[in-house]
Amino acid sequence: MSKTILKLEHITKSYQDGSGKNLVLNDVSLDVNGGELVAIVGPSGSGKSTFLTIAGMLLSPDAGAITINGERVSDSKKKNWTKIRHEHIGFIFQSHQLLPYLKGLEQLTLFQDKKNRDKVNAPDMFTELGIEKCKNQYPSEMSGGEKQRIAIARAFINDPDIILADEPTASLDGARGRQVVEMIRLEVKKREKAAVMVTHDERVLDLADRVYRLENGALTQNNEK
Ligand SMILES: Nc1ncnc2c1ncn2[C@@H]1O[C@H](COP(=O)(O)OP(=O)(O)OP(=O)(O)O)[C@@H](O)[C@H]1O
Ligand SMILES: [Mg+2]
Figure 1 (tube, helix red, strand yellow):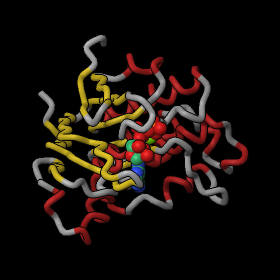
Figure 2 (cartoon, rainbow, N blue to C red; figure 1 turned 60 degrees about the vertical axis):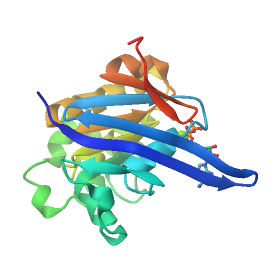
Figure 3 (cartoon, rainbow, N blue to C red; figure 1 turned 30 degrees about the vertical axis):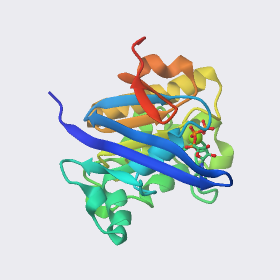
């Protein structure tokens, strides 16, 4: 049995807005094991990005704990959070956020720590993701799907334990979007990462191992899958 890599316990988060306190996450818990792709759906404004941002230690919850590989990282001092993120978390965003002046392969190698070069081979990632032709191309010469695949490869390049993706297919059409999620799934399984993906795209939900719905501050497992 695969072990729990990411553990989110009793996460609560409110934002202050004009009319008062807006409770976005109300005691939300989630465990994700290695090799597992979990999808989160829910209406716009229900707190999906907030939840992912907290899971990625980019935002503190008001209450609750984040544990990675058995270590309660949310107890750690704020000044250590950048290092924790760097060591444990890979992000995939809605738009690829590649640097316009770097060629495909450089988008990966420039961000890879020396110690991870033996663990994750950048050229092999291009082959696995079917984008070998992009190694020497600039983003302006690539299609949207190709750019998003490089963004996927980049999320894995420092061998993180956790992959977090916020609407990774939002800028792509149905077929390309599906391919991108298939690639995320492939790498998550192969490398035994714990992955959480927020999506509006119902057509990719069958690729997730579990699907949750976030609504009215609560996370509930979708039993239809
Ligand atoms: N920094 C902030 N300050 C105040 N309110 C915020 C802030 N960020 C988000 N919110 C509010 O919190 C709620 C949840 O936002 P969030 O972005 O997490 O939703 P979402 O489910 O990702 O929505 P979408 O599907 O549209 O991306 C929304 O009502 C939003 O307006
Ligand atoms: Mg969002």
